[in-house]
Each structure stands twice: as structure tokens, then as C-alpha cells.
Image (cartoon, rainbow, N blue to C red; front, side, top):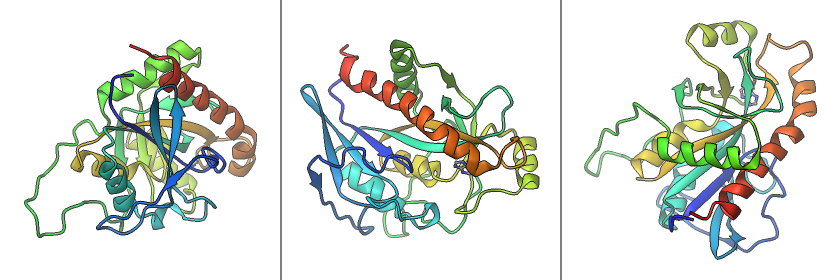
Length: 246
Ligand code: HPA
């Protein structure tokens, strides 16, 4: 590994991931993160793990304390954050069960605390032209190549407010906007990571066709695809943290 401190934020579908490891309780000036931050041991280094929706997966996307989550990781001196999340797919060449590493995003969320700045400290207008760290994206893609998992490189991730899924007309609009995948959590995570000086990239699990695009119901898609996508993502992570000694 590079000597950098890595963290993984895992989303729905990862309830048991890391649950038997020691958890660190971290509090921040923004309140408490979603749960204890666990330490995953890989050879001679540790990787922090935070379950975004809490241990019981009860915290919905619009109610997550994103600022506390990201600040807690920064307090632990995290350099790089790999965010695992699930998405619905709009792009016709990508299918449920696959894994993607987006390179752009559009934020459709509202009412979330999306900045560390509260008017009392010197403000920096962060440059979010490229919302994901290209270096970290390439590291993830390299791990994917080494693991033999076919991961789609790039695409626009739309972040919707949730917790409800979209209407078919909303998905049509997202497509007109140039969106490839739709999920609920990459913002404000990406912007907060940039404000806090951490690299951030998504490893997104495609678990359904977006509303109005599939033959089956969205929940039938999710049921059928989540395990496949999760296994692919875990394979990539295993190579990322275990084998990539360079
Ligand atoms: N829309 C928004 N978020 C999601 C979806 C979706 O279709 N699937 C998984 N997360």
C-alpha cells in the first residue's frame, strides 16, 4: 500500500461487513457519525469502515449526518475514502449486477447539511469540477483489472433525495440531463470530502434498472442483483487492500 490511510463507507447491503472488528466511537463538532468506525486488518495496515446507514441499516439517506461521518474519518487522519453505494441504472449498456466507478455527478438533493462552513471560519469555495479523485478512481479501476472483475469506468451519478425511488418521468428528465446512474448518497459526501481534504471515489453497485426502464419491478431487480454486485465489489476491495503492494 502507499502508506496512506484508507476508509470505506459501505451502504445498504453491507450490514454484517466488519461487524466483528473493534469499533471506535468518534464524536465530532457536527455530532455523531452513523455508528462506530471499525478497523479492518489487511496484512500490516488497517482500513477504517463506516456503515453509512448505521449498524441496523435504519438511517435513511436524507437523515444521515454526512458531516459527522466525513469529519469523523478526517479526525482519524483518513486520506482516501472509497464510498460503496447502490444505484439504479439509466444507461442502456450497463445492467444490474455490475459495478461502476462514476466520474461525474449531479446533485438533486435538498435540505442536507452539505458544507462544513457555518459562517464562522474562513470560507473556501472548493473546486468540484471533477467531484471524484481521479487518482483514487484509477487505483480502484486497477484493483478491478487485477481481480478480473469487469468494472465500468466513468459515467454521471445523479444524487436524488430519497428515500423514495424516482418516477418514470423523473428518470426521463435525468436521462435528458445526461445521467447514467441514480443513487442517493454521493452528495454531500463528495463535496464534504473535498472540503475536508480527503480523496473520494465511488465503487457503485448497480442493483436495478431505474424507474420505468426495466421489465421487472425495481424491488424484484434489487432482490435479484444485489448479491452479485456485492460479490464483485468485495472482490475488487480484497485486491485493493490485500494484494496491491506497490
Ligand atoms: N434510484 C435511487 N437510488 C437508488 C436506486 C434508484 O433506482 N437504486 C439503488 N439506489
